[in-house]
Length: 352
Image (cartoon, rainbow, N blue to C red):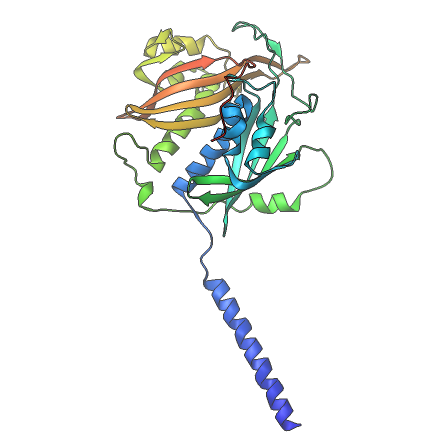
């Protein structure tokens, strides 16, 4: 009896020791982190998503190649490159089309990569886009034509880092719904800020023809400031100086407005106020160039109805930019606006 008791005690002690070792290992394991460049590259991935989906580029394969080989889009369901490419093909897609407006990306590092949440709204701009200065009704798109457009809501993402860079492991549409209490999963997720670490590739400077993480962040901040400067003058109401200072001294806007004085005058012609909000800019895509960088960004100028008036879209489309470094930081060298237009798509490309 005593021998059996001793054996049991030894087994129990061994089990407790093993459990303690597991706890020590778990506690000593470093928390998952993202580098600053990881953060930048994931943001670029989600921006490329909208361009690839809305244009149907490369016969849908531009969209499919944003996912891992076994990647999945959930609702409607598609798994793998061929199904994802087929999902991206639609008669409504075209090289100048802009439908998916996503913003408010939040990220969290995980042991396998990262997860994310991002708001999305989908707009149906009239095919016959009126000239600038006229208005068209703002229509939030519903599931009317059997394609991907499923009202407003948010994306729930899983990202992994591959030999070709960050890719979607999965992307799920979570439709907006009022009521129903709280979402504990989402509340917990938003309370955990993304953890960043530094590595040599995050250096402030980069050789010509390349961009550092700091360059990307500064250019993102520049373009994020655009709406605030134009609509409110950073809360001052007088928006001329704030807007013109986003450009170089010889900056050119919309092919016909050049230099500080002309840019400031252009801004002062627009509706404005200390708390005014009108220019919604998203999907900022940045690429290095020999001169500095180039960029694209979706734009919707929304007049939110007041005093019983309806919401309207003043204009929409996408900006095409060039950026250069100056002694005062990154500035816009040129900015042009291209209005949205449905198809036709270019000749279908063969699968790569």
